[in-house]
Length: 132
Image 1 (cartoon, rainbow, N blue to C red):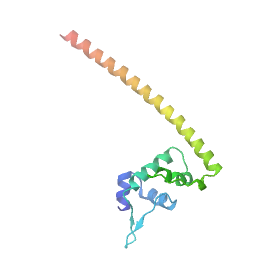
Image 2 (cartoon, helix red, strand yellow):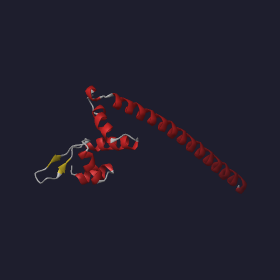
Image 3 (cartoon, rainbow, N blue to C red):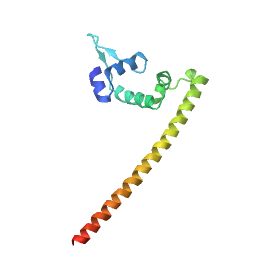
Image 4 (tube, rainbow, N blue to C red):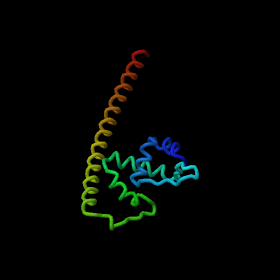
């Protein structure tokens, strides 16, 4: 698929897709006319990259762990420097904290909605009873 379709399907600007390619996160074949041609698998790959970036990982770390996201998994242990391991442990711990915060926020919103909806139903029932 061409870069425009990949951009549309992933919600990622074309400029950012070119940046991912420059960083070695994705690779495009080239058509005879020079246009980029992306494989279908890059739709999921772009979404994975964006999720990892949103989680705070730098592109240099993402590039090293991308093979771990493939099926079958291909892991290159020679790339696992102590710095990279420490960075990944730190990022994992940060993600765990964010997940905990998101769960607490989701639960608070759910409780709020339950209370509001319950009160709305009670008011509606009271109105119906007084009208009847």
